[in-house]
Amino acid sequence: MYKKFLKRCLDLLLSLLVLTLLSPVFLVMIILGAILMGGNPFYTQARPGKNGEIFRLIKFRSMTNRKDAEGKLLPDAQRVTGYGRFIRAASLDELPEFLNIFIGDMAFIGPRPLLEEYLPYYTPEEMRRHEVLPGLTGLAQVSGRNGLSWEERFQLDVRYVDSLSFLLDLKIVFLTVKAVVCRSGVQVDTSKEEGNFAQIRRAQLQEKR
Image (tube, rainbow, N blue to C red; front, side, top):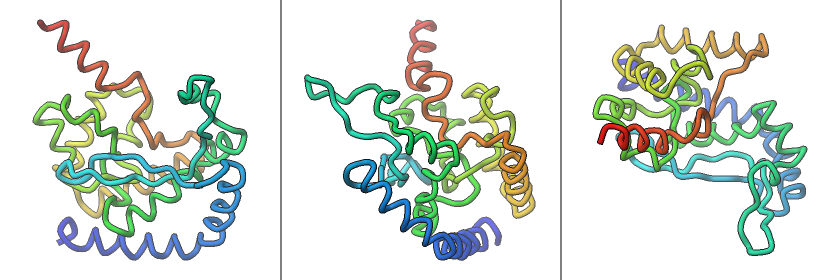
């Protein structure tokens, strides 16, 4: 009952509540982002969701589109502004993901949506992380953070899929809030950590040949 119906109802109601309460913050950030980023304050990126279906993850932009003399984008470090570093540190860049939750692309709790380019490199067992909606935070994010390898994270993602329940979601919410309050943080976007997963998996496959 919870997995098939109540979880989505709670996500819908809570995301609507958050979007309503934080609407003044959204408005300020949209205006600031448009001014400081020189245009569209939002950034979207294709991510695999439930059953591997692609959706557009929404964030507030933290980097400009500055390019070099050849018209190529400068490295990330040169495009992140002071404003961008601030909203990243405060996790404000993640706020638009509540829109993803509201429209049904994501849930509050679930495996984090990673990069589309990773899809060909998951094992069949790892692909099971896509049997549920991806989440804003998840079991892997409150179970060791950056100390976990990609394989360990995926094992936790699959464990979440197999053990999904209201009590487990409640526990993850509690651990997430605790981490934020204690300022230890919860890693949200793991797509660029420990190197690119696709590159790592390709290297592993090359070594086996």
